[in-house]
Structure formats: C-alpha cells, structure tokens
Length: 409
Image (tube, helix red, strand yellow):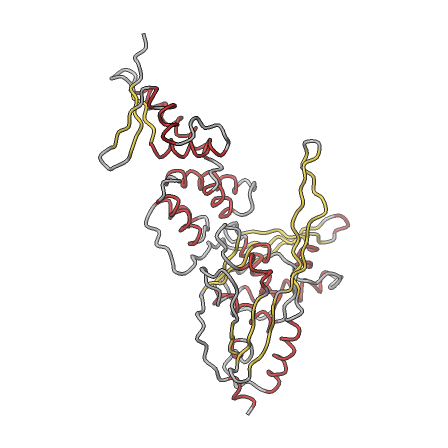
C-alpha cells in the first residue's frame, strides 16, 4: 500500500527555466541528490511576477522514483530523512567589503550571512506530495530578479544531472556562459561545494568531483574541458573550465526580438524581464534606442578586455542608470562634426539635436544638480530656444531642435 501514496498529479505551473541570483549561485551550501531535485522542482514553480513565496506541493515522483518505477518503502524513508535534513540547511553568502583609504581601494573582511534555505519541509500522505516553502529571507535571491545580476538555466538540462556537485558546477559555469571560460581557485570551489577540509589529496577530488561533473555535464549544453593551473610547489591552485559559449535563455513568455535594440540585448544575455523594463523606459521617452545599442557596444568591449564580469548586468545597469550618457552625447557630437564640415561650402550649416536627447541630458544634469531651470521647459528655453534654436518635427514624427549657424566673416 505504500506505493499508492505516490500517485499524484500536480496542478502547479511549472516553468521550463529556473533562475537564481548570482550570489546564491556562488553561495556555500551542500545538497544531496534528492534535495537538489526538490530544489529544482521548487525553482521551476516560481513565476517571474511573484513578489512573495507560496506554499508549494511537489509530487514525490519528481524527487524519488523519477525513472517511472513504483516507489518503495525505502523511498519513503529517504524522503523523511531528506525533509529533516533540508529544514536545517543554511546558505552562507559573503559580500565583499571594499573601502577607500588614502585614495586606494582596499579589501577588508567581507560581510556574510547564514540564512536557512527553507521555512519548512513536510510530507502530506493525503496529497501524496511534499509540502514546502522557501524561507522569506532568501526572497531577494529568487524573486523579482530584474537587475541582470542573475543566472538562468533550462530545467531539462539540469534534470540530466545526477550528482549534487555536478549540479552546482553547472550553475557556476552557466553564470559565465557567454564567456566560454571560468577560472576558480580550488579552495573557492571546495567552499562553494561545502567540501572544505575534505579531499586533501587533489587526485581524489579530481576523480570524484571534477571528472564526474565533466562526465555528467557532457550530456548537457555545458560540456567542458578543464586545465589544472599549478602554483608554488607544483600544487594545483586553480581550475580553468573551458566550454562552448552559451547565450542566456529568454524567460517565458519569450520576447520576440523585433527591433535592433532588442536583438542587441538578447545577444549579450539580457533577460526578457530586463528587456521589458528597458522597453518601458523607451516608451516613456526616458531612454533612446540608439543609446541602448551604444551601451551594448561599449560594455561588450569592456567585457572582452576582462574589465567586467557580468556583461548582461553591466549593460542593464548602464542603460537604466544612464551611466554612459555623457560618453553617448560626446559620440553623437563627434559624428555630427564631419557632417557639418562637409556642408561648410554649401548653405549655412545646421545644428540639430533630437528633443529626446536634450531631455535625457537635462535629466542627467538634474541628478547631478547642474541643470539650468527647474523643469525641462525652463531648461529648453534657457539653453536652446533663447540661443536661436527652434523646434521642428520631421516626416516620421521625430522632434528636433534646429539652429542655422551664423556664417563666419
């Protein structure tokens, strides 16, 4: 009769993609294989619109007897042990603490937190399901991930993995998916896998962790090779993982890349939710599509030089915070100068600025408290209209500020 307890159909909405913030990807915590399956099942039931965690009911057949065989009494005991263990699991997350002293940036002891992963983990025999809920303190790591500082993976790829260590290594590599390489110190990898003090003989760590992960990930979209980087005394200090670059999947519902700026963002791994946020800013006139493409080009260059770690996150932040607005305006002016020189021998040269650009510049100056005028209308009058500019609208409805330069004597 024990096996009848496991015949249950779920009505939960299950996503094909699972997402977590990068500090959780790099957090120190251990999971058994059963816990890993439950964790994935819970992630798959988080909706992008969720603002709080809900109680979830996970059919036990998603955790044990996943091959389709009839569950046994041994499976029930495993679930009982797993729930007891999972309720005590703690995430250890470090946050760098950099301070400026005497003009130099120094690294001090990091801040850290020890946070229980679960609020509770129960089993309901009536529902033939695990009744579980995430701890509210991990909300920032799993909900409303719209800032680009997260990693997402296809559930179907994760389900191919059998070892909990392989699962964690998959996420570590997926975070750097667009780079095709990631170098990790052996000590740091052991810390993330919660293996500190274990496998003191590296060949054993290589055999049981690295080689097993390499074998299991060879069945996924993140098959990898690795190099052992040795330090003093010929001991292995770092591991360099090499793999074919993979682009970030788009969060469902997928966003059709119908414009050049959308395509540019998708190419660098910006998520659909982040693209939607940028689209709202464009619709409001707060961001110009050309600025989006400028940011992608600039940040991609910095990424290729190794100056930034998360390309998607750097792009999203620079767009939404207008970090590169001054550089963008300078680039526009540089492009306008050749055109002005070319027209010097003809009619009086014309200076043209998009009204949208002028407004974006005003908002940037407002944030820096250097704007002339309390409102954009006042700023427009003081800086442009009083200096001979006039407003015009072209044939496609774009508003411009236009001024004919006075001919030189």
